[in-house]
Amino acid sequence: MTSVCSGEVSHQLFADDLKLYSSIVSDSNAASIQASLDGLQQWCAIWQLDVNVAKCYILHLGKTFSPHTYFFAGSAIPVANTVVDLGVTVDPLLNFDAHINSKISKARSRVGALFKGFCTRSLPF
Image (cartoon, rainbow, N blue to C red; front, side, top):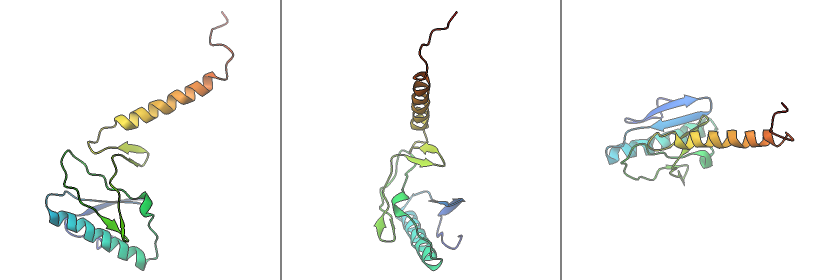
């Protein structure tokens, strides 16, 4: 996989997840990411691996970024405000408020479903 990444682009693999990442300081960094995506597309074609582009996202981390459009297999990769990665919701500022709120909401709905099974909430004594 090292031959796919070009320039300052790095990658992380976990099971069937791949993340390409780099600091974007200039247009050459953005070009390196696009070159890495093109190399990944060629590698996938050689090994006959399909990539579900609908599950691919660009997440810009930090307060400032220069918007670039990246393509994979001729399709533009959408920019996301939040991404769920390995069950954790991540936003551009690395705040976990959305993740925590979703877990609280899920817990409340499960407690509500549990309480519907009781006739009364008062103790018998």
